[in-house]
Length: 365
Image 1 (tube, one colour):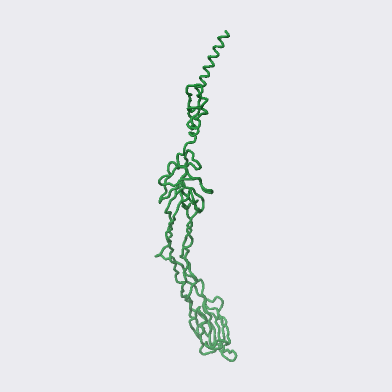
Image 2: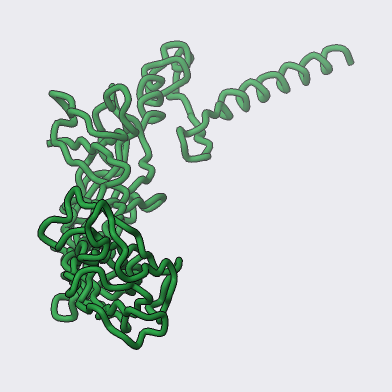
């Protein structure tokens, strides 16, 4: 019984050893398969590592299979401060990203076209305004040619006089000043002007026109993923007929002297704050007021002594004949406003078109 037991045990051991030899397995790189490796006949096949066995020459071949070649393009490493490499194309319209690099798509712009702008010509209408009556009326003891230094006697109208008949500050007839008749001439002070202005107008023949700028060039940047590895380079989606291999950096910078050497500058957009200055008018020039004024001997404005046209441009002197007459009242007719002109301003273009957010793109030449 003991002898049989030993014999059976030895046979079992041999079978087990054979099974262990046949079932040596290794994983195939990157594909999730299991390969069964069967050694060549001979007792030392596994020991010498022949024909792809574990630990043999087949091990180096297996390691190479674990680092597949880049299925896109091996891009130079970006210089410091620049982005990861991407595909870049420019055209008169946006260009769709290739399927290999369609994870992100960014559109920027170059060559902004700014059409000329024009503003309407500004003009000013004749001025409008109001007139006020003189505030001073003075008698002089000399004729109009010699009033300087002569004795003056005020005979002013009431405050805020509207020209109606007024007997304020009357002077009796025949009064003398230093032996001379006090009333030999009447000097009327200037009229006043009020609420003067010119209305501004923009020309209807040359209207305001500020066309919006437009981009001549659209720049498309595309990011994607490629599989595999490169020696001292980055595996990225490969270039196409339209797309270049590039890196970018915000702002305007020089490109490196090797690798990414071809420079493009693109922008996120623009800001247009141009506008036409509104039309306006300066102060009126050349306008004046005038009215007909009469001085009367009595207080009822019925016995005229002297009359004349007074205005806003300065004093008006009227000689009294005969000298020494009474100044009992005064009356002024409705004044007339004579329009002047105003100098126009405005109608000029202000502001500018400014590019926003520049980016330097450097591409492989």
